[in-house]
Length: 206
Image (cartoon, one colour):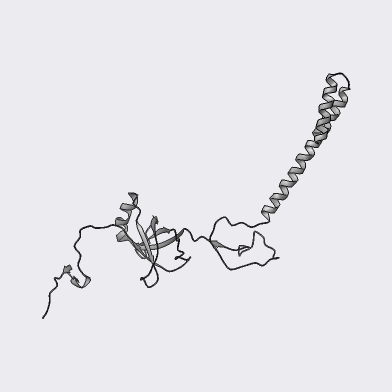
């Protein structure tokens, strides 16, 4: 195509010198346009083949943990497969934990949440002794479960240590407020009776 363009320039120069017929210049210009169209057509074919290669490779939209292999090389996979074809990826970082609390605690939780306070949430293992991950309260469900009198809350964790796993049972502790300079007593010094809570002073028996 480059040679055709150079010939066109020569012909145009000769036409200015009245040394060549204009028809020959027009014919050469048409030949250059024909070559340019052929190049664009070939480039379109190349782009189509590149797109086909992209479609031939499965790329995950998110990072996470994929389930056990459901298909083998050579299996025919379609969009209508009930098992999802290649597999299911579960996101681990960040990860959410849904837990419940009594509706009696809702007012104390919503006040700082609506004020924009980031309330800390810590997860513990099943025995409630080992801390797994720390995160923050994300949101509260829009209704109370009338059968249990509880409301669902969602907390988000970066899960950098991968201490949390999908569908894992965990215990959660939500830090709602910190009371400073408060007087505390050991649990054995508190008695619950019909009249309410009674604080009993400690004494030494000899």
